Image (cartoon, rainbow, N blue to C red; front, top):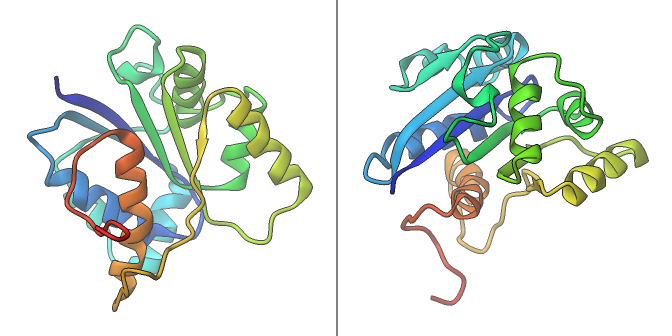
Length: 186
């Protein structure tokens, strides 16, 4: 059975992670029935600043407005089983941790948690305050997965894209999707 995944992109630095994630998901048609995307206004601005273009508009996915509470994944009755927030700002993480569903991203995350579905958050911020750590603890205790945007180096990445892919490949693994990627000692 093919998966349906929600990708939320929030206003944190790290647009390269979202770009690589969308690129990889676009090649996984045999495993994915549907990829839905929602971006905050700040995410679009940061993408343009960091990537240098509006290439997010070119992906073959359905994009939903940040306040579109009619999106299918805003309801527990939908068949979306996985949500990735990449990158995840600490403000978004805090709203998810405290159950504040004031936009489509936080509402969909709330749905994932209440329905015991997979919610994967990719925060990039550093250093972390105790508030950040406690919010991450709360989300983890509620069933979410915190996957910091901490790249690995043992695959000897040579470009920024290869370095970012070390994080994205972990996220794809966490989603339960099959991929060809570097595996330690394999």
